[in-house]
Length: 256
Image (cartoon, rainbow, N blue to C red; front, side):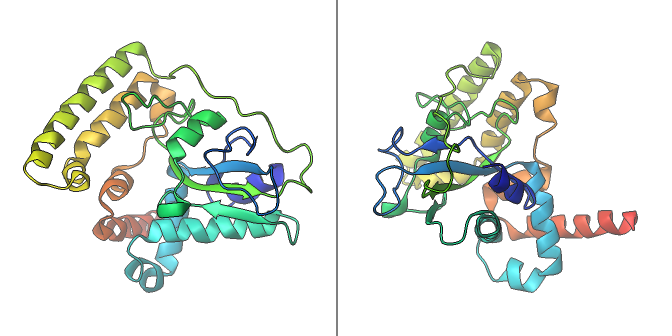
């Protein structure tokens, strides 16, 4: 697992704790012909943004203009590249992404909680909370491996039972979440699709995220996304990417 982790780190990504599909078999796919497999989640923090911008700056037309969501596409590319660089030749594996739908859908929030990557309270919050990064991380993939050549890799999945947020932060975030749901319900009653009602209120989602992050202290807030990364995360507005690329090029030019 260390080799896989290092390969992902070189791409600006991180790997969650490995676990056996036996433990969470109702949630994840299996390798054909293998009743038990090893799996782990791949996630990103603010670091991945800089890696992604460097890629866009060197391939603006190919990557930025062609793809509806170039960040998701680039994540897929580098995850496959990291696996190919770190796994034994011929080892079977399966990848699922957060944007997969239908039969390929995976509930990443529940899986992150049950596998010990992050805390999740399904009774109210839509955010998973990492013990270090707080709400400032994003799921990128679930990787399921044939375990035969990876002896000793699998650890027991251990769910995070205690919310890393302070009780005051939880209550404040609950209030913000409830207000958001009430506003969204008004729009939904008027015929606005639910996804659209949330999308136009993306700043309210950021407020909840900030509330959770602040409640975990200054160390957590060091991992907060920059403003352009936050805006793109919620809106997929390519103007955010164009501005971020320009800032990235200028900042690196000043160092040379």
